[in-house]
Image (cartoon, rainbow, N blue to C red; front, side, top):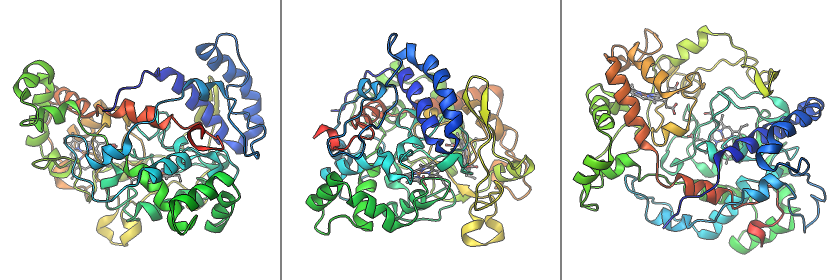
Length: 444
Ligand code: HEC
Ligand code: HEC
C-alpha cells in the first residue's frame, strides 16, 4: 500500500522558487543579481551552513555519467511508489481505468516529465508548471511563465486524474494525452522547441533515452512512443480515497461507514455536501453512483470570461524575490491575454467564455482557481457563486441566482476540503524519486 511521505513542504516551496528563477531563462542578468538574495532566503531553511550548490549546477551535463550536485534535489529525494498497481486498482471513488499501463512506460514517462532538457534551452520541465507539491499545478502564479519569461494566458490545470479527461485543455481542443504533449513542447511561450524532429533528435542523442526507448518499444523513440511514455506517467496520477469517498462510497467495503460519519467525517462537511446537491453544483460537478469525477466533462459559462474581459489584459507581474517584480512579456501569439474559451475551438457564438468544468478532487490543493487563476481561495470561489457568478447575461442560468447564506458558504468550503486524496503525499514522494536533470533514471 502507499505510504505518506515525510518530506517537509517548506523545502519544496524553496525549491520551487528557485525553479521559477531558472525557468525565466530570458532574464538571466536579473536572475544572476537575484541569486544572492534568493540564496539568503533559501539557504538557511535548507542548510544553515551551505550556500552553494542549491540549484543544479549542471556541470558536465553533457556527460553520460552526469548526476546532479544540487543539495535541494538530493535532500528531497522521494520514494518510488507502485503506480502501476494503483492504476490497475484505482483508489476508492474513481472509475476503472481502461488503458493498459506498462510499469516500464510509467517509469520512463516520470523521468521525462521531470527533465528540463525537454525544453529548448534546457531550463523548463513539465513538472515546473505542473508542480507535484502544488497539486501538479502552480499555487504561486495565477498563470504560468514559460520560455524566456513569456507569459501563458491560462491557469495550469492539475494533472491528478487526467486519465479520465476526454477533452483536454480548458477549451477541450485536444482529445489524446499522447498527442497533447506537443502543445507545451512546441509552444513558443512554454518549452519553445523548434519542431517535433528537434525534440526527437535531442532525445536520441542521449544514450539513456535512446536505449531505454529501444528496450521498451519495438519501434524505439518516435513521436508516438514519446507520447505514450509521458502519458503513461500522467495516467497513473490517480488520486481518490478522500475523506468524502470513504464516507460516501466506503459503504460496504468499509463496514465502519457509520463510525466514520460519526467520528471522522465532519458534520459541517456533510451539511456542505447537502448544499452542494441542493443548489445544483452537482449538476455540473457530477457525482455518480459508484464513483465521482466532480465534472460533467462539458463546457459552461460561469461568467469568469466576462469578468476577465473587463479587467486589464496585461499579465500580472511576478514576484521573484522580496520587492523584486518582473512583468512577463505578452503571449506572442495573441498579443493580449484575450481568451474566448470553447468558442476558439468551435467558432460557435454560444461557446464564448465557456470553459470545461474542472474536477473538484484535491481542489483544496490546486488554487488559485478558474481558467485564469483569478480567484485565490475556495472561500472566494464560493462567494463568487453566491453573488451569481461573473454577471454575464449569457451565463449558464444555474449559476445566475444561487442563494447561499453565509453558513451555506462555510459548509460548502468545509465539504470541498474533504476531497483531498489520501494518496497525494505518496504521489509527491514518487514524483521526487527522480533526480531532476539526472542523466539516468532512478540512479540506474
Ligand atoms: C509553461 C508552463 C507549462 C509547461 C512547461 C507545461 N504545461 Fe501543461 N499546461 C499548462 C497550462 C497553462 C495548461 C492549460 C492550457 C489550456 O487550457 O489552454 C496545461 C495543460 C496541460 C494538460 C491538459 C490538462 C487538462 O486538464 O486538460 C496536460 C495533460 C499537460 N498540460 C501536460 C503537460 C506535459 C506532459 C508537459 C511537458 C511536456 C507540460 N504540460 C508542460 C502549463 C504548462
Ligand atoms: C453550469 C455548471 C456549473 C455549476 C452549476 C457550478 N459550477 Fe463550479 N465550475 C464550473 C466551471 C465551468 C468552472 C470553471 C470556470 C473557469 O475556468 O473559468 C467551475 C469552477 C469551480 C471551482 C474552481 C475549481 C478550479 O479548479 O478552478 C469550484 C471550487 C467550483 N466550481 C465549485 C462549485 C460550487 C460550490 C458550485 C455550486 C454553488 C458550482 N461550482 C456550480 C461549472 C459549474
